Amino acid sequence: MSKAATFLNSQVGRKIATGVTGLGLVLFIIVHLLGNLAYFAGPEAINTYSYTLHQLGPMLWIVRLGLLAFFVYHAWLGLSIWLERRRARPEKYEVYATRGGASRQSWSSNSMILTGILLLLFVITHLNTFAFYDFATITHGGVEMHDVHARLTEVFLHPLYTVYYVVIMVLLGMHLRHGVWSAFQSLGWMSRKTNPIIYSIAFVLALIIAIGFIGLPISIYFQLV
Amino acid sequence: MTIHLKIWRQKDSNTPGRLVDYTLDDVNPDMSFLEMLDWLNERLMNEGKEPVEFDHDCREGICGSCNLVLNGMAHGPYEATAVCQLHMRKYKDGDTIVVEPWRAKAFPMIKDLVVDRSAFDRIMAAGGYISVNTGAPADANAIPVDKYNADLAFDYAACIGCGACVAACPNSSASLFTGAKISQLAHLPQGNPERKRRVVRMVDQMAEEGFGDCSNYAECEAVCPAEISITSIAKMRREYFNALSEIE
Ligand code: HEM
Ligand code: SF4
Ligand code: FES
Image 1 (cartoon, rainbow over the protein chains, first blue to last red):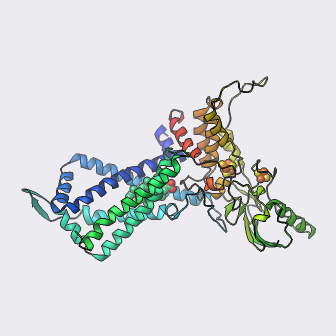
Image 2 (tube, protein in one colour):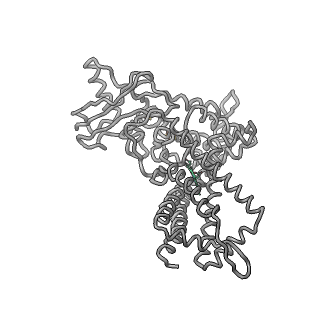
């Protein structure tokens, strides 16, 4: 095996890769969130934002392929860590309990595989709803572009879709509550002093991301914008 | 005091085990948990029954031999306490305690509460050593170590190799043990000659033995009787990254 393959297959390398891909996806999600906020500035703002992105051409495809690779690799690592865990303890405890204290076992950390798989399924339906959709067009300032604003409004006026979306964003928040802190530990960026600080920052960041994403569908559904 | 015990009994690795109920109605609160088991075993032997097999040696929290999971927690419910240092006065009259062995594929069952922890020895043999010249002993303090590194190395050296970190980990990972050994030597000049080779080999051996991956649950730190911090695991990851040149 090559050096890189040996590194990535080691228990430490796998964690570093989970952390790098996880943080990469978090960066993307933050950019995505900021993009969504353009909806609040009106149809022209969000439509132009989407139009500008599409003008990037090959660059856009490079970013898309990179994202896809990160996403698939991250999901595969998460899945294989979980499979490994099942293999490493063939006979379960009759009684198992967490000691608390320094332990980071929580709803969030104990459901990473579940929230992860649901996010994976969500992303597929999400791409189908928005990315591969045949948008109507609209003209802003003499330029013809996709009417993303109309599509968003249409989708989030459906109660079922709105509820589905909000639930998934809560799960995303849960994934990131453990995930963001965990990634720093995985990359070795942790000391006794920074451990509690990063754990708190991860909570705040997860909360901001979840609330940020939930804001748009709720505002549309209750016609606040 | 009266204590109800549900103890894992298993003849050997080929025979399925099960929890067996025992009630002791005259437990002295000043007994340690292991003394209570001695007390139980004495009775069982007097009745001509097979005593409960369990590991122990120093009974003062320094050897790392004792290994019991009590009501689902490795070494029982108190932090920084090996189970040999746990006293019955911490329990209430009439309490029920489920007693199980460490459970991990890498720690195969031997009998009852005794498992084979030699996987840890093989991780140590893979790199947990330093090279020294033989002959007359070197002068103490001949190699200066600054206080900062000496303190950190000492904290990590406190690991007694008990395996509670593996037992408590939902993934059965040995990262805390291995991280402690690697970090201890990484903070000392004596550890420098084999520094890179050490981390690569020990991490490899960990996987080889069948321990799981680490998901950063930090349950290990919570149960560790020596209070080893998960910063040792972060340190192990930095060390591994810096050892890229040694990876084949
Ligand atoms: C929206 C996309 C996602 C983001 C932003 C994200 C983010 C993260 C982050 C930051 C971590 C911490 C990495 C570490 O501990 O080193 C993580 C861990 C994890 N992710 Fe994701 N993730 C996403 C999607 C997924 C998907 C689709 C799956 C699985 C199908 C998944 C499964 C997992 C698992 C199981 C872990 C824990 C790994 C472990 O046990 O150490 N994630 N994620
Ligand atoms: S790190 Fe702590 S729990 Fe793990 S073997 Fe060492 S002393 Fe025991
Ligand atoms: S018997 Fe030695 S540490 Fe418990």
